[in-house]
Length: 302
Image 1 (tube, helix red, strand yellow):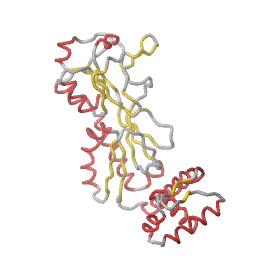
Image 2 (tube, helix red, strand yellow):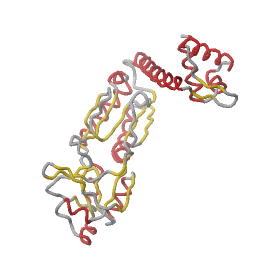
Image 3 (tube, helix red, strand yellow):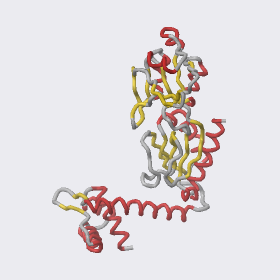
Image 4 (cartoon, helix red, strand yellow):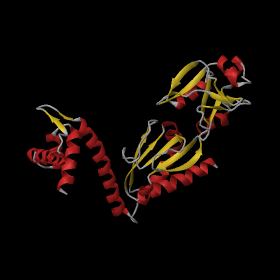
């Protein structure tokens, strides 16, 4: 336990950038905490921290050790929680990471119902299109669009993530409705921006992939803003069917249909997935959330 405490002290010094601040959080004298970290370095035979009167920085080997032990302590904490929480009432903080558009439109409205069912669960919801690594980023559940990941997590398909081209009746009346995908280059486009850049418009013709993207008139990671501009007749938009459903139903936007299907990637197995670590399903709060979301979202999809 002494070495485990020394590792915890070391991590807190790195996170706070100060021995004094770390000692304050643990409620121990700074000198005692400093000795423990020094003993840890001595046992490893390596200098983990560069110390000065003003700052504390990791050495190169210290960075490697920090990343490793941080993951180990995270797994240890998860194991302790699993043992303590097994077959008990779902409770505690539940961390959910979800892509922005799906979160705003579909996930958030469901969470009020979930909170009413499980009032002892504290929801910690982050909406971001940046990828999260379960465990490392302290995320219990992630919802992502794309294809099933290769990391060691369980992936449940919630719904297809089909992207479709749409435009408003006013835009089509003024500029004409394209009848072939290659005609899209003669129009203007509204593009959703992912962390890797704007999504292209791709199609497969005679076994060859072609980029048929129109010149961009607007690029954003704000889906509702792009949809509003599309409704105003400012350009053609490629977005997910689930995000555009209400606009298609009201007639504000019309789906453009071509002989060749458009896509934003050459990977044809795009879907929305719910991701979680297998061992976390034993924790009641995670099991409750996974079961609830899978049941609700698969019903919506059907």
